[in-house]
Length: 257
Length: 327
Ligand SMILES: Nc1ncnc2c1ncn2[C@@H]1O[C@H](COP(=O)(O)OP(=O)(O)OP(=O)(O)O)[C@@H](O)[C@H]1O
Ligand SMILES: [Mg+2]
Image (tube, rainbow over all chains, first blue to last red; front, top):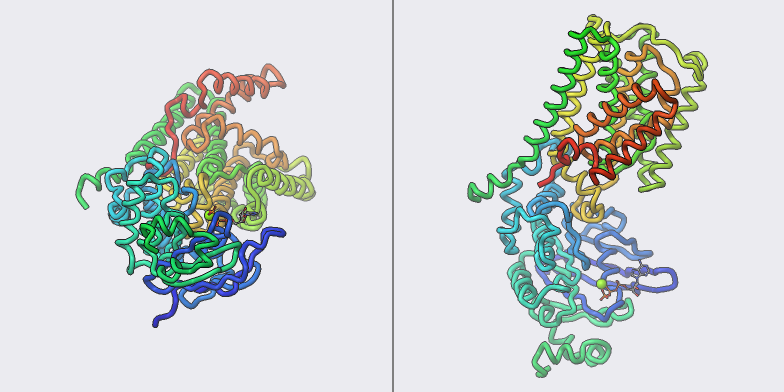
């Protein structure tokens, strides 16, 4: 079995008196969709932030493809292939969809001198950006200003931004939240089509999406890992059903579980 | 990828920005020619001052508009440039190729030291820190007793270029300043449309997104801070020549404030607007300044009037569009 893409080793973090991450150790394997579920306030977003670098754990380490990245900046982690879709939509509102993706692509370019080359009139950049936009179904909105897009379209745009960076690991913080039923279905399909090619750590409250996508799940409760395992095992666990899932699982599996 | 998508990608804004820039430069040259033909030496020197101030305003407009950094210490690099010219000229090194590079490099190096400290903060704290650093250099300049201390000192001789006395008359100085302004305006416009410009502009709106894209936000802001300081120092060398004199007054915080006023008046981020606003402020200073000590009151009232009347700023007033890699 090949080495994990991501390993979290004994992460601990506090917000003042609030122990928000309690000795969390998780691994994401290559090509795997690993879902992170848990009730509101369980510390899922905080954990993602420690992986992508916006927050520093107080102890423990974050290891990406064998390299310890715990001390690296957000930008350095991004250049090593960590790409995050934020829980609260986060794009450059005044830029066109295309420019947002172009910006993401040049973030992956190496060297210094590229900076003095033109950006938006570079057709090879634009081609790559259009490709990413087409993947998420936004090709015809390429020239639209991001603030004019619908919420669902902006979520899709964020996905295009991350895809354009050819990430090693996609960190998805509730990509379906606030998105309409139809768009959420399309988004699930899109993520399913990426399965196997990109490793993903997926936070999602929509259990239909989670069980449709996840290879393994980790349940986080009160900042600690309650359980990790394949979907069947999670569905069957009385602990998890009691603490969190219950009705949602029944809904997702038509009450058969 | 089909041709339709391609065509849409080419940025028409760049062409527009270049045309506006050329128009502004052309107008300055035309005004200079008119002043020469009409035999108005006073007007000639005024145009020179406008061009020189425009270079400084342009660099600050870039910093505020493109990088979102409001520096209240921009007089410092200007003053540093002026002192470099003074000291080099006193030592007999009058060549502009050396003076301009030395001024640019020294101011850039100093910005490379003060920048990372100031950039630990944002907003009002950043403004106060840049002001504090500039005040420090003001006192340093005042304490240079052998260079005239508080009073300053006359320039030994005007700068030359490759042995030619290219700044001998005020008209030549004005023409050289306008030419330099043109180069800087072009470089600045072009930079706004590079990858660097696209990243910088995005940072002013959303640093978190830009960092998540893999850009080290503070590095980019530091580049902008350093470049702006270097360009301001270039205007300082010209200023020393224009006045034939250098004193700590060039580093006074009033000067930094006046530059911010010019940038705001011209429209933040509107590069040609900064040139128009420089002209307006200098003309005000000259003509109202003759009648009253309180010309700044008149300037203030005019700014208020413009903002109220137009609901916008001077750049928009003259139809100068906002700059930047705006898709
Ligand atoms: N910057 C902060 N300072 C203090 N407390 C915080 C901060 N950010 C989050 N918290 C707290 O940490 C806990 C975990 O928050 P987090 O956002 O990680 O939860 P979550 O699992 O993502 O929840 P949700 O499902 O609602 O998104 C919450 O109690 C929250 O109030
Ligand atoms: Mg959350």
